[in-house]
Image 1 (cartoon, rainbow, N blue to C red):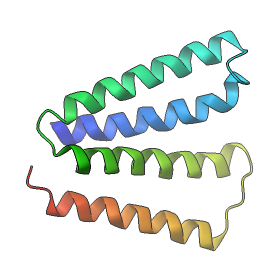
Image 2: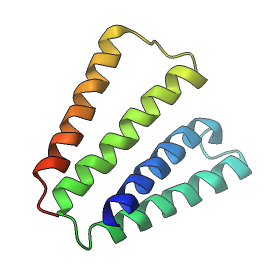
Image 3: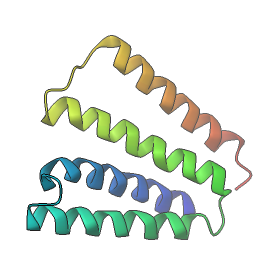
Length: 106
């Protein structure tokens, strides 16, 4: 169950990271509220996951999910460059996350 919480925490991190773009420096009320709620949810789920998962592994996977999801959504929503090099780098992040999962004792 901890891995599910960690995955959901990573998705919530992606949500609040993308939400930052819509807050316009926290000058827009509702995007700021939803971004803040996403932050709180992400941290709460991460804190639940690290009850039983190694903190280093959980943190690396949490940030990896967030970074990968944010980069992909940035390409889709904000027309950020979608180059082969960027996808290759994201692939390396994913390989690292899978590797950490495979060697994790939990």
